[in-house]
Length: 150
Figure 1 (cartoon, helix red, strand yellow):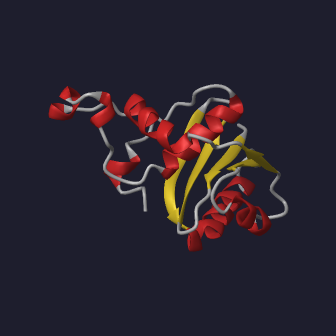
Figure 2 (cartoon, one colour):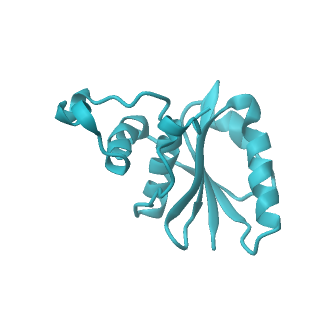
Figure 3 (cartoon, helix red, strand yellow):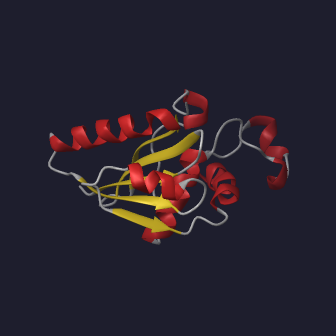
């Protein structure tokens, strides 16, 4: 198992994603208030210590507040800065690929379908997929419907 963290950095909130790149699977994804990002990273790093797989690297978008975040991230974590141009818009499309519209919403044209919630975790997914140059699976429930987006 090779664990990688992806981050869509922001000023007030960030999208965080923990993935297993060996199986191309999302383990956890969430939108976290900026004040709690480092705590969440420490939790994932501590969980990895007890496991055979440690976190191999953190992939962070180069957009909003990226430089500030890069200075605050744990020094023990290898950091890869990647271009995040257009990831927020692409996150909407990726969301509907993972969790297709149901009921009357599927009758709407794709351009009018707007997920109800913050897409920062999905933007982190898009950032990581671009970096890895392959799609990942998100077998867990829709984070916008389960309250995992905080």
